Length: 114
Length: 106
Image (cartoon, each protein chain N blue to C red):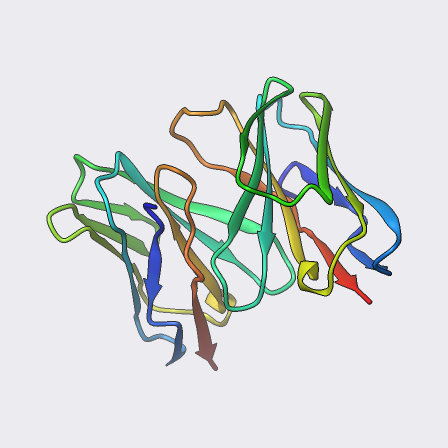
């Protein structure tokens, strides 16, 4: 148990669907992250939130829309995705953004786009 | 980009043997971290080494850092089947590589 919970664990959706991924952390951390992990590729940092404010947005297409309503919850809203968006989406948290320290990861949501 | 890049891509060893994998990066760093990922799970933090450290140990793990060569290595001694996983290095800017997949054969 890492203290970071992601739901759902698996998601299959069509290209025209709208869905949301959820992440919750019980560690009292102030920073939360979304990563995309595709097979044989480096982990891609998508978004970073610090104290509920977005601090990083690494050229992610607008069909991915993050939301951080409070420091414990992070969402990734998905709409009109493409087949190349099929991947494992990982959420992580850390004590503070910009401070050296470990990240705690959830087990991810395996997303498949039909 | 300071992206870490792991080498080799894959490694297969016999239980009890040591496993060594390397990480190279492009520009100066303040710290480097190693993570493990078991199949179907998230990444788990293993060890953090700062730029002023040359070596660090944690149980059966030994990490070295050579800032002059911009490289780090992770050594797992006396490997076990449970060490079968992918291992990633990450630099300051949370730049991860594609990982080294380690398979420990019984």
